[in-house]
Image 1 (cartoon, one colour):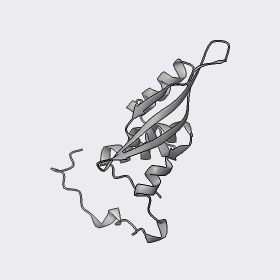
Image 2: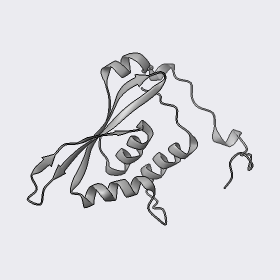
Image 3: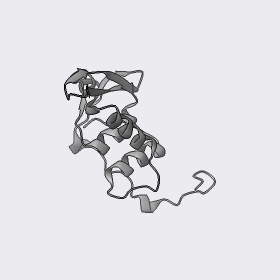
Length: 130
């Protein structure tokens, strides 16, 4: 597996994308999906392509079609990996990691510690305002 540390807002955006519940208003990642659809573009995949100074880099691999349905362009757009994952889970596309990135940062899942139980923590409302 490829562990990438992200913050609570990024984790929440991914969780919302994975859930079947809809938010009252579109979230930013939903907006990106809506923009892609409006531009006749489809997210084909997300690729985590580089790891430098403990920072991962990724891009969105998009296929844009013209009015006749023919592929017009295939842009590659830079993104934070967490944003790419949040969009990918919404559209159901694959997420890839370059072999070099896996060689540098991948870990055997059997060696991973199970994360802490969220019920073991009490949120400090000053630290995590609602």
